[in-house]
Image (cartoon, rainbow, N blue to C red):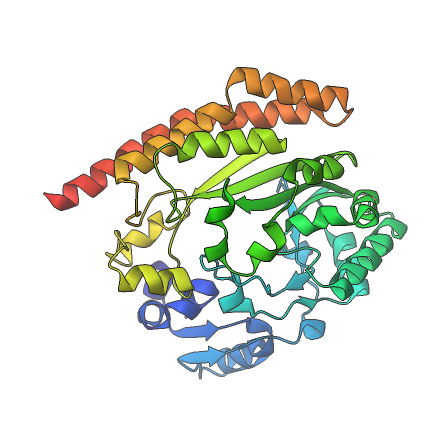
Length: 375
């Protein structure tokens, strides 16, 4: 922003950070758009053309049926993945997540013809569906998801795509089969904690996760030739030394193809931020400089039972445990036996394994940075 303003270019900033940290962001730009921009974007453009930008615009929650098709033809060529959004909002309201704070709790779904047309306009064969919750939670959400997948299959898009979903995706065999027919090749599912005690504080997601047979759910998805990536959070208030090994063992027991573990991170606008801020547990708060660490891949908070050194060692232990060569080969064999994607599994797992050393170096640099502040 500073670079373009020095060149005399007016800068407008929007998105989650600009919405949650308006007072900070507005100091660096000419104008701010809070909330979803579609409802006010034409006014922003008109004001900019007339040289009369307002300091702030509030887009609020956009009418989903009015969201235009993204202009994928304006993007440079050569991306590995295209991207599309078919819905917004999430009723789960997890304490650590900013989606509900930004997009609202009401689950809003784009018109199916719009989604199909936009899919057709994407150049890339492989597509990331960026919805925070692909199929929703209520019966009418599931029905619409089935209708969408049928329309996508009928349109013969010839795309392969991956998406985020909650575990209830596996409850409906027809839903999973239709997603596969529509081109779904992988889902990213948040299990969050290896123990039931870790889940209640997260929000309504507890109701979806409690009492489930995760291994059976994962297998049900995998039977339709889809890969399952499992996500967990490290640093919950119940997490103690040994949590890294417990997460690796739980993910192995569930049978997920890949594991993604993130540090519990207080993000502005979330209940977790308010709680940790009030308890003095936000360890890195020299903003805006420290925002670069708020990527969920660094331990930026003070955790109840884990020191900085502890939680970093637990994360490394978790990665080494899940991505040990015997376990990688076991997953590849399972994929081969199930006629699913053994080569993709092997390459993906080896890639994660090779990143462990890179992560260790990044953690060491992070600890040095933290240490220098105390001196």
